[in-house]
Amino acid sequence: MELPTPADLRQRRTELGLTQSELAEKADVSQPLIARIEGGDVDPRLSTLRRIVNALEKAESDVVRAADLMNEAVVSVSPDDAVAEAARKMEEEAYSQLAVIQEGIPVGSISQSDLVHLDSQARDEPVEEHMSESFPTVSKDATLDEISNLLEHYKAVMITEAGETVGIITEADIASRFS
Image (tube, rainbow, N blue to C red):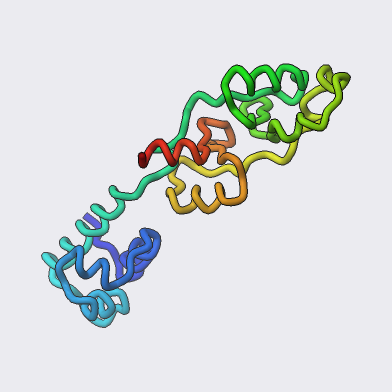
């Protein structure tokens, strides 16, 4: 068993968004002790270190990740699909936007607002001529905070694994998770 270094403990705590005081409370130790351990000023007893590591593991298990929120069934269109096909899918699925995916890789997005201004001739044109930028991508390990920050600026977040699309998250997914 390899014991975490003071730097490991500090990094893990900050990644979880915990203050020294919050970690101290969860581990039932004092905040100055956490500060001294993280600073390398003191070597804690094994029982104290175990309480700190257990508190970090519990906090980590409480973190909501993209894998917990994502929809694996991604309704999308190809860049070569006709605009009419994108409009049909949006209407059929009651979505206001779709990901544009080519060979598993997100390459753009198309929304109802992209289609509103088009004339009837554009219905037969390929989606790639009218698509917008792709939704941002994150890994399955991305936290709820990271995803929420992205959703403040984008309509969806794509979840990828080794470059391939494996899921999608929208504000509706987050709302339904916590309602």
